Length: 261
Image (cartoon, rainbow, N blue to C red; front, top):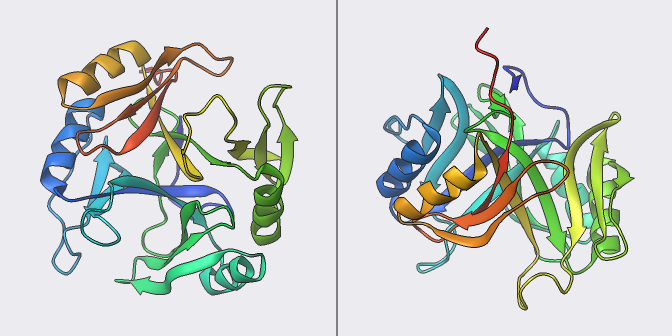
């Protein structure tokens, strides 16, 4: 379990949020699945709700981005010491800044960008809102990874922007590396190979920890979601890929429950 009340190191996935058409419906889904508390959004926040687990903020749910009819999706935000400087690096390295950087009600400074392969991600320069306050326990963020058809190109891009080091953990059938900051593994980057369905675009995946992956998959179905890839064993925990009741995909992974003592 990780608890944190200070800003995350530059380049670390520090926040995730969900863009949907029906915030109340999505909030009820995740409250039932993960035990999140989703209080009403404050005035002036455009309906954006900060969800909490055991009193600590874990994720956001807000209006969907893009034109009407755009699919619901989770966005990964990477911590930026200086969002404006990071945005400049993104452009120089071949990415595109879609929105911002802009100030968000004194909470921090945000931008939305895409990498050269087309995967969308956010930047978050924390101020009053430092990002996720709980991670790596059931009901909270556990992992983030970038997947694309240009593994080498995206590695070069993210290294140029955030200075990552890499830990190669792929094999002959799957190219994959961890992204490291100061020697610590903070995220992953991999290749969309033939094991993925045709047409899957480059994207950032969001993983949430659960105590029992199979039980969580069944719960997703009960709540109106769907299973995209049934649970399977990995060296890092039992995983599954699902979609919520708006069709937004995310992954589940078994993590250890906190010691009550």
